[in-house]
Length: 412
Image 1 (spheres, helix red, strand yellow):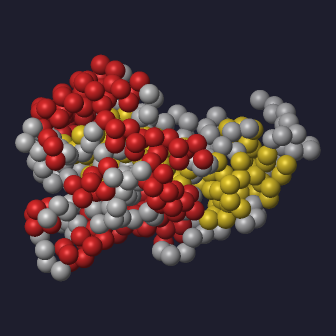
Image 2: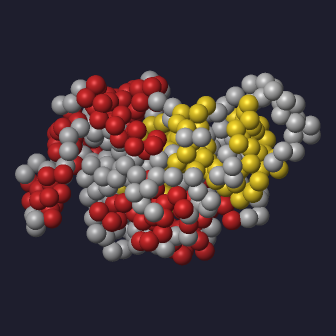
Image 3: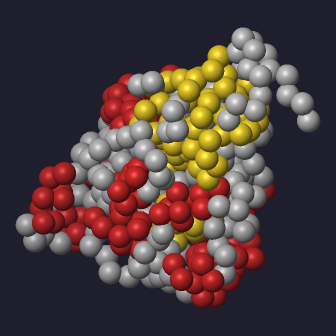
């Protein structure tokens, strides 16, 4: 089909395109010496270099630089109050988590600090963290609530996420994680707290269009299977996609439950077994690996990567950025960790922060690939191969960041 370019179109010429398109029979979906044509906020076409008359439209010669889809971080807890560095120091000095919790530390310390922080204070600190992600080429990011644990403060966290998207060139997928843990006032009444979420928090914040999906910490120290299913049933009643923090510390069967509800993703999954993997394979649910938390907590039980491969479960990789167990605002560092700690190949990692991460956010048809019709979110790198991007930690080879067809950062 002939393409007639408009004056407002942009041609990114003479590139190495790591498309992540499964229809291209090459590692990373790599195309050498190709042009990327952009119209408005979408990719119009991909063609061999200089096969199309460009007329008077803008042409940007990237001189054989690498172009990839914009990075997607599909699991973060970016918005919170306070700081738990002192707690980490105490743990390194030998204090147990139980002792810290008894002194008001742990997640309850973050809940307390978040509740006493204003919308503006939370927004200021979150903006600084978000800037670090964008500087590394992230164009879509998920942000969970979960440190408010009541209607007022969960809404405050989600409102911060909405404001961040409004004032930054990035897409934010907000997730309601009110079922992160029981707040102090419901410490001995977890069923009553789940009722509060289902009857008040979830419906009221959904009506305000403040989140895209519902998450839960289904674990021996979180919520059990019955409480998790109660939440999933309510989400299903409203037509809200679900996902879960599951099988991080033990195998409760949370992944099978998420799969039964055709959830978007299961996250952590260090203790996932073959039965759970088979359930994910049948449901199409994405397995999200979080090597930052694995590293920071000095865990030893690795997720079942070989089983995930065997049953063709899509694998995503994310930072799990949070103040207690993964304080790393660097997706490139976590990509490196996923190779070193979990044995993923560089190509698997790249798919994990592009195509599969998009699927984990319910955006697989429009994000995470360079192909006609996808959003024009991409990064030009001062690099030849995709592995170069996260091989040398501390060096950022980002040359140009493009969001919705517009340049947001450029060294060209």
